[in-house]
Image 1 (spheres, one colour):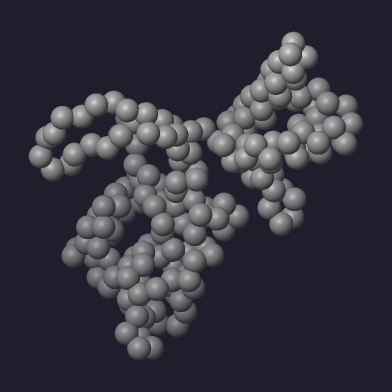
Image 2 (cartoon, rainbow, N blue to C red):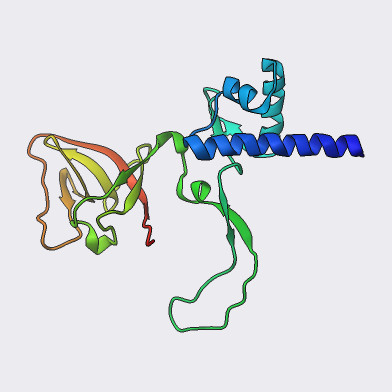
Length: 198
């Protein structure tokens, strides 16, 4: 039993080491960096550790073998729901834990973030200083908010398609619609907005 407990403590310590690396660097470590941070001396030992962590859903690997955070990404407790209409009694109840990465991002490899500048999308609830999460792997549909390069200039607008006519629509009446004159490239679809109040 003592031996099993020691192995479990050692595994938890290695998970903490990898998690700390992820938090400090904003990326998962390489296999050699895992060896360095955990004190493992052989590649085989690192591969065994990664395999065990995959089984625990702590991390996973993409098609190229690159490590992707699973539950190792910081998670937040979900304590219940809150009424946004009329007030109602509420009790704190731990429903689940949720990784913001898992909640906001469908495909990590095709996702990037941009900081918003300007007020043309304020009617859609996207304000200056917000961060938008963009998925370049999604097929843009009419009505989506997209990041697009129009005639050499970058913008974020609602995509409107009517037949072969494409218009980029603002969500603020102070700004005009944009119709591409010669070139339109859509870089991705906005899937989420992140706003920090404090």
